[in-house]
Length: 333
Image: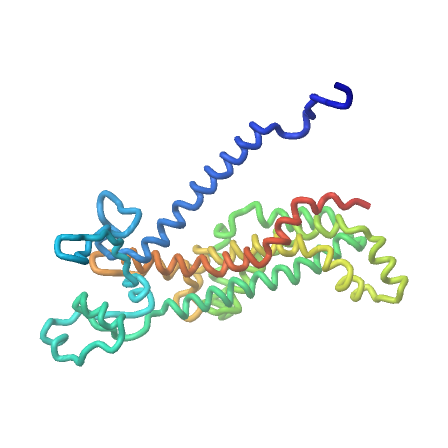
């Protein structure tokens, strides 16, 4: 039969390879999501279920009698972990609890069922707010300064450009915590210890090397002719940078911001060493949530779940730009 071709391209993937790749992706997604789902479910478990052996992936399966002799299964989930996360409690005697007026809210009733009363709010809300300020503040500063520096290296003749870029890259070769003692001494001498400004400056400095190198590569991919044409039309260098370069570099900025935010959001060592009160972030605070007989695992699970939300929301907001980064290198002069 003329016009019928049975040849197969060696470049195009076969149907079998597509199915195999899909299977690998699904397997990886399941392995990556199991710990996240586990910690989320732990936030809804009772203290007994959270430390039970063998471990329970889901809360206790109980039965409720709907009709005489007829039982329906249900999963006993509780918000006790979230209540413990946001409140401070004190154990009281039964006589004292009986002398109190009836509980006014569901969480008061829940706490009293454990023979305790709420004495006030916990410090989690403040620590969570500190994480938002420091994490997003340092990310903004790293992207702002890194974009300007990357544009300068990409568009201007900078003396010893290669040496300076290598020096900037070398700041990422050593683990930041290796300089913890000098940083601690400098922060104590300058009064930046346990302050929002100090932590924002520190995380900005740590992320600058990564931001400059990534953004420098993205800006190099943008043809200079675009800016030259804009300046011929009457734009200044700054206007051409804002109206021509920045829209083209949005993909790189989004990807770099994601990486900088993940570091600043999850950083533990510096937050533990340099903060203790007013500027302490959530990572060093969550492991210190103490319950009866040890860690309050439902409260830890609840805090970790809430801690994941800002990064997840930010990732969803910039997902289109992150996907565009796959084909960004197709643009050439």
